[in-house]
Image 1 (spheres, helix red, strand yellow):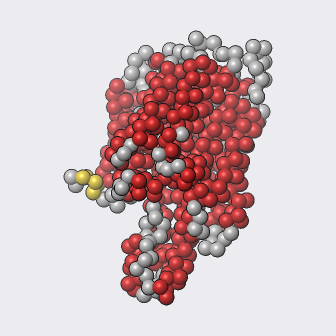
Image 2: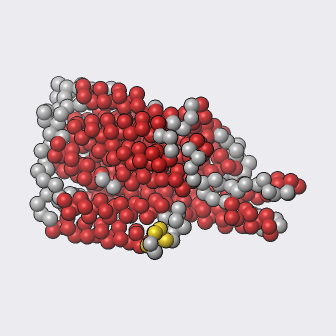
Image 3: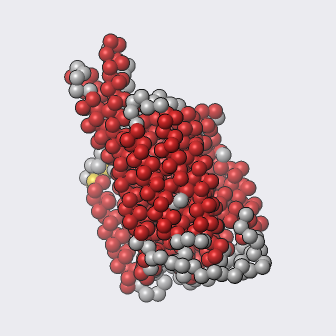
Length: 518
């Protein structure tokens, strides 16, 4: 079936439910790490792998899985991924030890990698250009809402039911998505790919695996030796070399390359991919310093911290459909630029505003500005980037676009983690300079990104409050300084957006068989 369905919005709703679960799972797990440490009696290093393995198995195969949709049909590949993701979620919740949980999360990531590229490819098929902005608005609203809702929903589930429920919640949602997909999504067959680029699959998969592994886990190994004398930097370098070899092979492979390099000749697509990297960088990195400030300095519980950020989530979800509709009427690159600048301004506002005694409610205006920016990012970015791609390349383009965002997320996680750790150490050293040498040594060795602050049980009672004040001051300074990194990175994305070509969409007659957007 290669004709557009009579009700494309029903098909989009089914696709968005699955896409929501994927993005939610990328952020919801971080809030449950302390509960997992206790419940599974596991080390922090092991629990960190619960997040790392998901990112690896999600990001690495996406170029390949995007071509599976071209070969076998996006609906079939999406359904396989959806079933795999849902069953793996059940497996995660039932895991009795951290090793089983890590394995199940790896399978979950593969399911997500199968699903994600198919959603954008389907939007390009389901909706004609004149209606695509509104559809991208719904998709962007789901993307933005899921990304910033994770901490809130995770806090509610962990506090009231236990960490297992951040996975169990996917099972009924996934079952509904499977039924809706089978009933509403057409069995579209692009028929664009007739063979697989095996050398390209191996080179890109190995290169991305080494690069993502090194960046995501470098801090875990203190950027030193991993095993057998091999260091993190050598692993990253090997990944880069393999990716360069992959690009060279794609240049010489004129048959059916995994990555059609000619697609980067389109300025809008290339600029959109760069903007996607900066967005992934920011959406992953911005929460680390904010969570440490809210929970460690202001003493908020995970649930209360999630409730504080809820208005940001709600505003981004409400604005995204509006920005999507506007993308059909004005040039999307200006909407994207506004969103990137607004999010950067919101993060800068928070960085200027935080102190150890800032009332939490005083942060809401800046958080709302962040939410407004997020609402204006995903929909226009997808519209202008994917709208520049010929129909026969939508599968490959979707894989490239989503892989870029995931790799940006890895870069953001690694860069913000390293910077935050460095600033915590420097700020604590400065703020505790007047304390006894033995106390300073304990604070410096005990502070870390995951915990935020060291254990003070051994600190003498008479100076404990002084030590607490010094630590809160140091952590606040570190969080404030670190927030400037994702804010500055967003400005690079804004420059990429401004470099896009200005396009004027010619009016397209609306077919009478197609319903109006809801």
